[in-house]
Image (cartoon, rainbow over the protein chains, first blue to last red):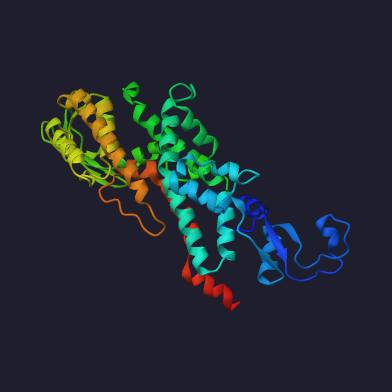
Length: 191
Length: 189
């Protein structure tokens, strides 16, 4: 999530590809697309990783479309019930949905960026309580492990957790576990 | 960093317990000891049957050697806790407790349960209160935003439990919330 140079998560978020349309001819660069063309022609559509697209968009060489993980279909699903969307399945490679969204947000103009920010924060907040609840539930189970009564929807939710949410899950689980251990430990043996 | 991951996010419950054992409690000594100097100050003299105030750790040490009775604090009684539990379940805000009540209550119940009246009832009341308060801090999670969070009357052990993920969640929200100045600054470049 951070912009830190050494942050692996940040690098992975920037590795997502978005669909770009070139506005100008780029001579002698056709091989970058893997094709046999000599030049990249204007109006050709190419999937570019964000780290490359970022600078091209700013230099006004290309146009881009808001990528599918943030399409209106996904937005509608998130508005209906944020908890039943599998965020990790929307983006490949570990699922840096929030990180991806954050970079896209910077590329958009003000109105769209605000909308994107609202979408991201609302989704995060809607899902947070469920993440923490489940983490505490698993912390309470102890080393014997999970399974049993937790239903299919809970399982599906866990599988759909985004990278950032997974991190929160383990933080919450760890601290709930430690606190529980402390409450259950006893000093009576010292007597 | 050489510190293990589990210790980086926040301090551990046993460490909090250690901090709490510096708090003063009243005891009824069963032996007499002259006034003794410690790093944190001088305590005593102990003259049975006069009450004396000592740090919790000394009191526990004496108690384990059966050389004193500990006078439980006012709030560690069935009446008080029942009252607070009623408050806790009927009102939306956290009710008031001593900051380190969870640690002190546990230490006293472990070591000096015979000095506390009706200690089993006290124990179960504390558990109920803890659960009621946990439910509240869980509800608070939905109102979390990137800039501030006020949780008045939350106690050290509770803060410590929620600290790692509350801090992280607020950090994430900071990244996801759009800073209106950021876009104009970027365009200047």
